[in-house]
Image (cartoon, rainbow, N blue to C red; front, top):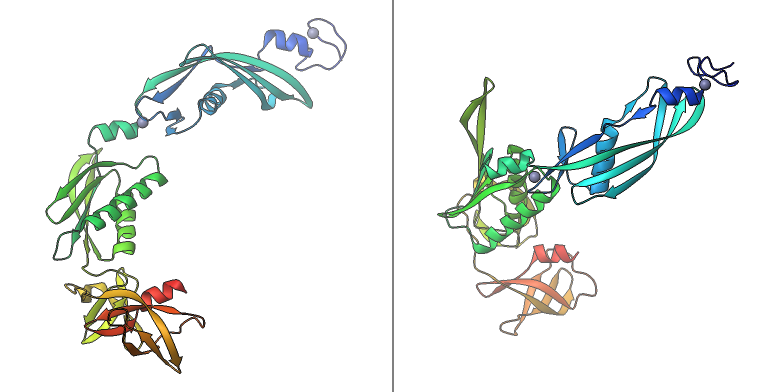
Length: 341
Ligand SMILES: [Zn+2]
Ligand SMILES: [Zn+2]
């Protein structure tokens, strides 16, 4: 084979040698400028239709790759090096090196462009700035005010949930009578948070929706999630059906462990509305001796030796056990004991 342009002997592509081909045609062409929008509020870069947090080098690599135009003869190309030379904080000279597959051959190739970062505002920041919200999460105490500690737990759960997805945000938080209102960027975030709050603080979640607006012919609803935190928490002692029971896990149903027998039951949370914990003292008591399914414990308040039925197994070498003191009587603290495993 010989080149129809220059007559050189050897391999040809569409009748011409590699040199004549590449004199006439760019195998990979980059535009003179590649513009990459960057959010001036959060610093995220636009990559296609999405915005994401990334290193500037990665944003440049990504932006350049999206704009490369390959000649029809190129069947494959691998970026082998990318030299990025900043002119200033927003402008970069970029030189890309490729290994191109042309028919059965590997051909090296270089292309250059200028990358310009363009300050913009991503959709998330623009919605946040506009006070946008899709859902309200109302957190209340059941028949009482939310405690400061519960509010802190809720705030910590919010912070944890926000870390998971960069598009989520809290538009505002309002302290209201008896609790907190959180205005949230998405219904999914509100739903997820309601479930997490329920797992750690218990309570029942109710939902309601209201028509917010019509957009593109569709009704857009806002959701309100209301969660009422019960008066009891894991570890508390409540009296239900005349029996003293310790609260295990909380949620839509609640685990109750009978302090006298160690038996545990699951009860619908709705059946426990208005139930409040009994005031108890918790302490560790010294094990004086044990015999069968009974132990002699030293009452940590009176220092009297008290017989306590072993309704749950103690570790063999336990010198102290967690106890609950209620109206002068001692019980094993079954929740703390189980947690010690
Ligand atoms: Zn030629
Ligand atoms: Zn942003």
